[in-house]
Image (cartoon, rainbow, N blue to C red):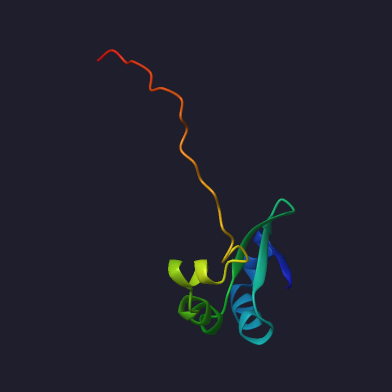
Length: 83
């Protein structure tokens, strides 16, 4: 991924957009630190449409599936609380 300084990205916006289309995502830095990533519309649409598993599917894929847990309730007495 190519990195552009913010000033350079502003001055050469059309080249930045063309680079996104040709080479993929482009990073923009501010004072030497990564600040943003510019994507082509094609890459953006692909990310938005990526199928995300629901909770049930996520739990079914869990490496802990099938592990038997023994959960016991505490036998300690309940505290008195003033209301």
